[in-house]
Image (cartoon, one colour):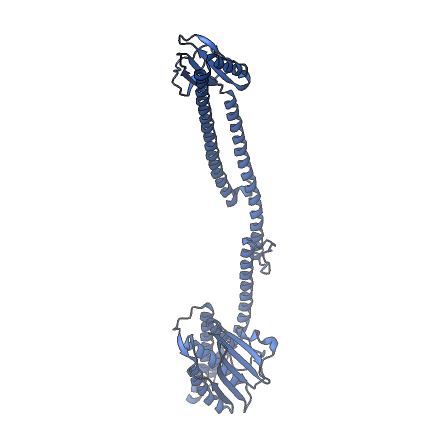
Length: 459
């Protein structure tokens, strides 16, 4: 017979342990309650018997024997209802009045309450088995007579039996209720876990768009589901990006390799001068250097996005860095009939990695120089805005359509779909990775005409 799945769940195992713990705890608590109740009842009986004996002795001493006999006779008539019994004997042990037929053995008139086994031959009522122990007290009167007072244990035993019955009912009910709650909780939790498992199985079969269905409870299972769904969204996005990267690599890396191979093949097939061979080799070197640059850019982006880039993080003067890079690229731009204007506030500092920030700013200036037309103007501005430091690079080139502002930060994305423009489409990807590593934000805006790139560092 196959064991039900719910019995194998950790919830049921936990509930079983909890039920055992509750059972033991409840048993101990109810046992203590039963014991303390019994002790309290016995103490009340004992104090009641002592008090009654002292009062009857006082009546005998102050009001006489006739008054005592009158009281005992009245109580004796009610004894069958109250289970309260008496025995009065003279100094010779002869019975004067009472319910008991004879004086019990081993009972001394020392005014102490003791439990005495009473036989049927002296008991006022018929006794069942184990009913023979009665609490008794006896004392001497002024003339040497002895007075005995006792109580039947039957009412107390009835109360104890009823108490035990109630305790058993409470104990059994608590166990059943605990198990039922465990079963219900197990089914509920199993249903929530099955929801996650079914989604995972669907994804294993290739349905990558499947997501965990969330309930309206907003509990820990929904929180887990939200995190898993976010993780799955990220994985799907990464896979999509990987496919796109793979497609782009097929063009951006294979094409240069193919050109190098073709040039070398042609050089081998034809007789050439030494100068021509050197030119072919030089072209191959340039193509291979371009490939190495692409690979290095990919590596830096990956390390930066993963936060694993190893470098010093210091308080750096971003004003000096931007000034040095701006002056360097100003000379490059001037050679291409383009102009870079610097508007940099002095001595602005941030905490960061100088190499990565220099790389990001250089990429942005290279892009601006590449896409700005002849006699175009590029501006590099560094300013503080409220509690932030901002680097702004703007040009008057063709700009980027607003619908592509997010797209251009992805790897190998180039607005030139023919991919004939020089470059590998990794510059802005690296810029975004560096900016996010520094906890900053990058924005693209229309410069009317051209593009304005703004990097904001929060203090």
